Length: 315
Length: 217
Image (cartoon, rainbow over all chains, first blue to last red):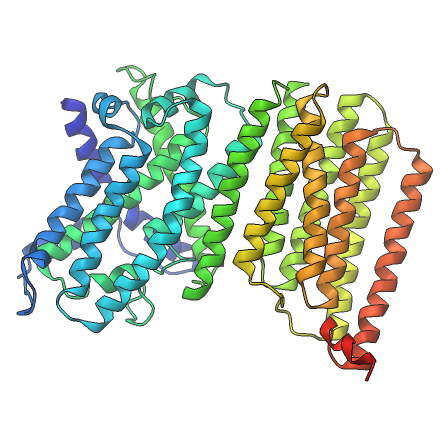
């Protein structure tokens, strides 16, 4: 029970910071100063103090969506370990549940975007659905590669299988799958090659476009859940990159080490994403399928290589 | 020993990914850069196989590969491309996502094939065998579906990389003289093909090979 509360506390409190940190890093790389490190928290405070304005055309769906999105993201955060095992995950956790929790949130978000009759929000919703159709197979397939290796679709078993392995398992299928997973995660959180989180130009934005009609507390919830989603997907990738000394080692004396390694991995991933964002432009919407197609083919190759190396016997 | 096998596995993955990206990329410079990267991966695989087989010969081969395929050939391709002044977009007969899916299918097929072929040999060699067959087939596929003479040349070199991988996977001890001959061939080949692309551009005002059909009229 405590671990559940701890996990929720960590993702809720860390996620605004990680988002601001990425913004700051990106700004510094581009020679700008960037927001202060606590900007994410200030933003949330501001949203939660503002008045909520709801369109007259909107029905109950519009009102209920932020809570559903927030709740489904929080439940998803219980499946992905940050730096300790969650006992809940052993019964609940599965890759497929994770993907469909995201799908649930996305379904409600898109429905709510279509609801108040704003043209831009509806357009953004249809784009989001197009992306979702392309992301899901890549995401699932690349996770299935890890599941096949570990022999379980349970994320905590996969993680503990990984931590039992020697630090160098540079098996080709593992790396290719990790690459595919990274592409899928970038698309899922809407970072640069797919969607620009900083633009507010109605014709190009995807995620921000769906939130156009929201204001006040509901807007705060939606943005917060997007940040939480970003953090947990980063933790998911962080769990798959070495060193894996996180989950099984947890005890009081080891605590600083484990937390430190986790934070370092997050830092590394943030740096990768920021570098990608500063060196690449957002691709045109109709080229997104090329990128995600690469991800999908890579995931398929990883699956094949995995089956191949298993059937070929030990090297 | 096991460490080398792991690294070779890693490099095989890198080469495979680069070949998929070559099928999927839209700009020709990017394609050339990926080709250089891929050849670098193959050169490192050769060095490691040299350590594995305890002979000095692969080191020479790796050196020549590095010089030729990572530096000379890409440099010359970029040089010709600047001379020809063509549009840098890749034009294809079938769309890029579909061709990537087909390339994925090719890779599946060739790994299935190499899994069927060797039952007694080690895992590493079957990995390299699958890699070589898929590189040859992907190169052929690229030559078939790309419209520009330039990308055909790159497809041909992709096929050559496949054959090269096959020699690493099967016979480590190819006589050095043959190896040198192949590289000379490649270098002359790229020169001839560079001139060829330039001539096509001169006569037809385009490097699109579909223009070649108009020879009859």
